[in-house]
Length: 460
Image (cartoon, rainbow, N blue to C red; front, side):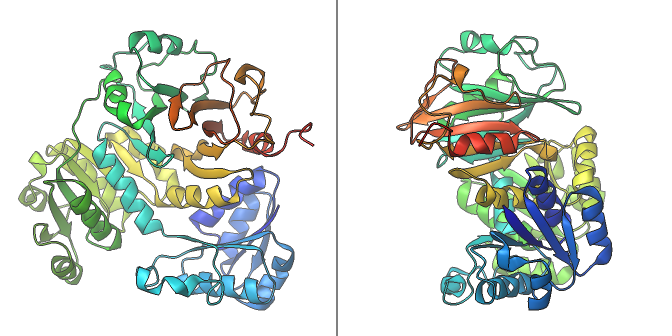
């Protein structure tokens, strides 16, 4: 597949890495020569220096022969114009754009992005998706990562094994005996820098492991209890940052969690005033510094269920989170924009790290993957993907027992949803056309799995 990416920042860099690893023909455009040099030094992609929305620059990138264009510059306007130019002049078939501004995303103006106006096929809104990611973590505070698939019927959970975990040292195959009728399946174990794909059930979980499992929504509480976590959803919440993300999160929590009590700390006086005017009146706004212990105390940090750091400054988010933990916050969720910081922060006592570029990458990849891919959840540090796919009649996964499906060693089927029924896959499980399948695929095996999801050799 030939793909043009506009923008070589964190998201563009990451997307270029994923797609070039999978043998796509990738060209990336950016005005910044240093960013282009960085991405071409690290990945097998071609770089073009210039404004991504200019027709001549898009011509240099050969967008006229591209199957897809992904516009992820820091400017909404450049992203939108690039899509318009790619459509009007070069007839690029598929166009994806990242849009930040809530004004553009107002449902009142939904026709703006129609084929007759601004022809963007898929819009990615990082702030909206980020607020939903935070909300999911508040509902499952014992997890460091939470996702949802199959119309919320299946949960994707990342949980860390502590010394209090009841199933430490038990072979995974015995979990079904330990927890009768529990509809849960472990799909990946992260141990240091190693990704373990538990295919034969002989593996054991050790203290410090980060484990990803899938489970039926109605079995979530039991699944968390099996790891020693029985915390109720967070209701008393302290947020640092009243910007776009902070106010979106506050509104989402207000609507989704009954009897929630929220306080927001905001350093900028104008931003704090605007939040006080626009957010529901039962949300308290404090104009102050989240790094000031007195301000944290005023916000009731010692009694909160969860402290959430959502400012625009990674350093403020990290330090305020550590202070909040020190002063008594039960759980801490921290927004970190720099992906390289994520492994470090997880060792400092932060319960959950949210990386906006990783969330955006997941949203984009689900539109890029071959086969009938409905959703993608990228696991921490982008070491693999959990995919929701619709099984096609042409796929080699269909019509044969899983033990004979020849999945690569870096992939495992975590769950099958057959006519609404959650099935824990076994060796004799036969996937049928139309089933929803949850797969974990370690990075480096995605291209091979994609081919399996498409057409088997004997189909025709």
